[in-house]
Image (cartoon, rainbow, N blue to C red; front, side, top):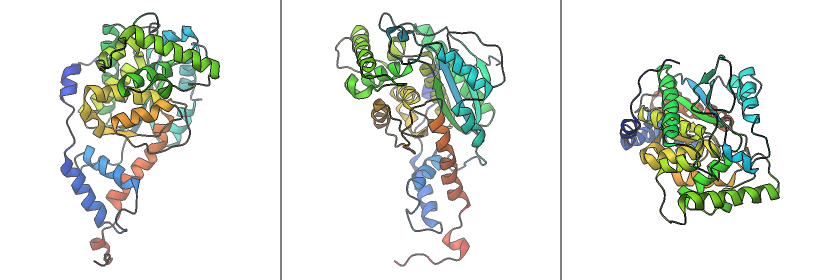
Length: 360
């Protein structure tokens, strides 16, 4: 990928503007004029209103859809916090490239362009179509023993995300999703969730990829010790970039940069599961206006996910009991998002169709 200049993080954050509420009013008036009982499309009306507002009333149809899957390893896997070995991250990247993962199937089915980004996998890959080699380092440090990342790592990973969002913009991709792959990253996301939402560790920590009760208890112990090591017992919410440095993953930092840049450029971003929503929560902590550009594809089975969604103020589109990641839940929601837009823009109005309105 060409290393074209991109703005600084500060200027990108400054460019995230609150969505003009006038477009919400305009969308509601249009929806209420369509040949249907008022409010009869339920959540689809709220989604259509948000999309109309994101694009200032000029939705770029047909919507070009894309999903970006950021992959990285986590040093905390050395503490036995995952049911799967660390090398599965690299193996799954190979699976993505070969087209055999769940996200490949769904992206093909729903006409969503898939790009996989190696931002920190502990392996080297040959150049391949659909795989961007943007490695910052080969995995994060063990956050129990040291900060997961250096400040330079955080900056570089955020820049990777911003570059990928710039690429999405250049390709005219207006509806974009962020997904991830990284063994151990639910541990990182749980730490982020606890620090931002002020929930107890046990409330935001699940079994990840399938830990048994003993494994989950070990994970809880690692998380409690990690947070105490880096943040003590202070009730103050730490700076979001400091959270990334101490307990974040490279893929989470990259997704944070992607979301901020996309929002600054008025793109609609669909969050996937727990880990991508942890990145969205960091982005929200940095620039609260980002929430207007975010849609929650689904609510996963990881208990911390619902707390993060509540923190940002997002209502999930789907609830399917999923906990896979990869961007799968976000891509599944995209046809519903586009359906809402098509209903808004293509249905006849009572006036144009010559249909009588409801009696006063």
